[in-house]
Length: 469
Image (tube, rainbow, N blue to C red; front, side, top):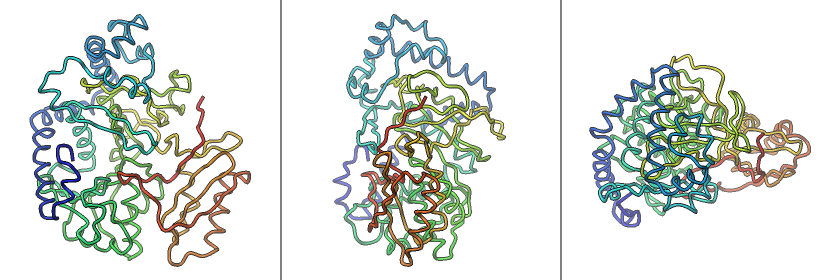
């Protein structure tokens, strides 16, 4: 909650929490949606229709300014560039970035203070926002954003929403990982209302079978025009709607923060009678990729950052080649992250989007390193492929796949009321077809599958490191 302590917030009754949530949003509204937001939004609206060459020049111009700032005002980069015998004039365009070493998570932790700009005034320091990763990899990371970074992030978010026909005043329902309702609460309401931003915040931590009808009733009462959430939370609501032979029509659906699997998209779109607009962004604020109304992939927002796709040795890969994401945010001058290696892999698509925007498309970010199953013979199996065996299994409420090593997979299953041995046999048969007979599969039947502290859910967890060449 930023300046508002979660522990203090939790102690207040529901009506006061609604007031506090709206009050905090009032503060955020001035900070991130004011004059700077409107000016930047107008700029980015024009950017989306620039020619590709103009977008590249935009990146290069902003990169030159960023590199100059990093050399002069960020001790870490000053030391790195001097070690490499580089000066700002040596990095004029994005192709020159390869002259700099890759920045890893370990580098950030080790050099946290040195990565902070030394020219920040007192007011600028007070207005910094501390961000952090979710810690789903077991190693959470912290960093700072300046006000401009917060504004730009909101701008690209709302630019995508405009692609879906949504405007800033539309009513919204959100099912993300914030603990807006104390986790120990046993009684309804399992939601809070932010009147400033017309948002109904639904708790992702109270979604039990006995509570789901209450969620649907609240949605019907609130009448949002769109909904936003993790794929897993929206999938739970969608499955409940379909199991009750109900639909809840919306204008658009936005998903993020987790892998969106084809089966989830299909179920969610059916239940809510609207298209899903998935987007991919990082707390590190170095890359933002948005699905447009053509739904042909995720557009790299080139005015947000520079994205490289590299192999295991950090060398650039061509179009269509799968590799690690290395990204440079163009707008955070408080703590610049230049050539930051993201723990995700993807590829730039050769195909251009029919929407006429020149932002390149990338393959679906279903290929988080920990989400790829690796076989003994070296094949990589995307988690999206593994959704298919589950499609006919309507008696499985939830599942999770864990690869322990090259020979063993565990599948955790929350059984539905009518789950039978035939479901087990079908699942094992279809899974074996896709991962091979050499892989042993063990089923574990559980009452629930744990989420991370911020409510995120990982469907596939592989403990086998992948090597991409």
